[in-house]
Length: 152
Image 1 (cartoon, helix red, strand yellow):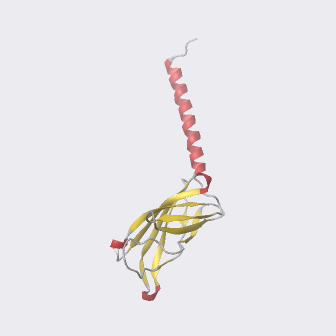
Image 2 (cartoon, rainbow, N blue to C red):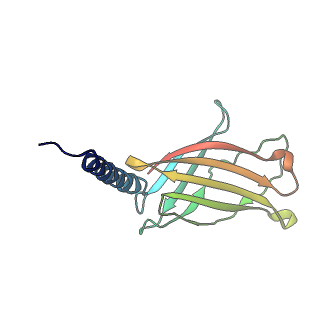
Image 3 (cartoon, one colour):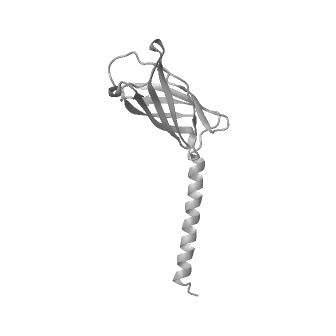
């Protein structure tokens, strides 16, 4: 019994679509954070200079908050007198990504100096990584970005 070319083509398309949908669903599930977990890791400023980073995922797995950059945050120029980070939170997208802008505030001068912007993506097995970018309002030469990775 011969199966027509049209039938074989339709079957191949249906099988391919089914595999694509199954793979897409598995990837979407794999990109979700561990609910209620604290993610900890390192920001890689250079191969020799690392900064600790941690944050918390809410119990429902929909938000990130409580960002802690323990010793400091990356600055890409010489000098000092940079402000402290203020708390902020962000929403985790259905694709397992987030973006949070932590305000930089210099208390002695009562001055908002810019932001540390953290963008991240969640992966399988409690892994997460992304970029930390500084965006200073008046010191553009100090702006830059570094990659980081964490585990929850």
